[in-house]
Length: 391
Image 1: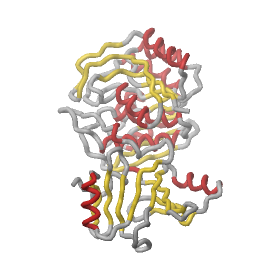
Image 2: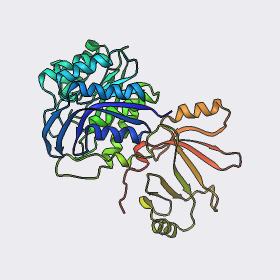
Image 3: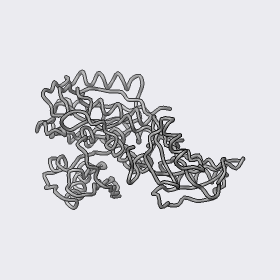
Image 4: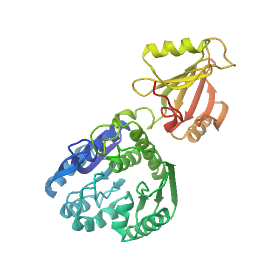
């Protein structure tokens, strides 16, 4: 069954954040997005020029219309528009038992204020209703009254907020200086998880918080545990940042539509590798077909990207020097768990999961005819490898 995600948030006329980013995220991850719009904003990549809050009773009517008919497997809350709406939404959601992700939106990426002090004060009840709260460093400082300038302070503030509201807190470290971005997840039972990656230098960061929260909500709606939902959501955000279309003169929108076959919800057929005899001739052939070359290792290996997000490679494989050495690749979010599941079902693997030099984690098996099959996990590296070329 398709995961149903109800989004309670504001609309962004520029399409980079808010409801628009939420819908794209849920859709790209295989869910069905429903909306309860809390505010209409006039904004673009340069900033917010006008905000029109939707009356609380209309927000509730949208929520009730969705829940009474379609239902929901998870809810994402973003910009709430007013203190009255925050209180009304908390009243309506307090009895629900489905996962709720609350992104306490206060300030837009452009710096525009989206929540006044009374609204921020009303966040307390929404946080108590939520399964996880996803503040960035400035939001965490506002919610706790603590200084949050470094990772240690981020950790201390997140722990304090989780203890106070009794729910999980994902403290986002993007605003903390450094070449690495570190996010910290604090679960109500005391467990802690750290997620860390290289910072992606880009000006197209509009809607990152909205996208992350909606991706987490979709993962929870699909049955993922919170740490796994967070990990997959972070990968989705990173890929959307890498694929940003470069629109506008300010903080541009992310590239949600380009994240097609990189992230769940299940195993994806997204890579095929074949052999070659003449490297230059094969490269010319596949480029002529219309594939875009993204890896060039002359005489040994080339990788291409096709429209839709699939990749295709040619490889000089000494074990298969003649035609017929094709390998089909299926990507898995959790390779080790998938291999364990398939072994329990009776499949025999020629190679258990192993980290390769080219930064993919792979396991190998064969179909009954002997055709080689590779299950793997590459994440960003499949379409955005180190030293990617843009020929």
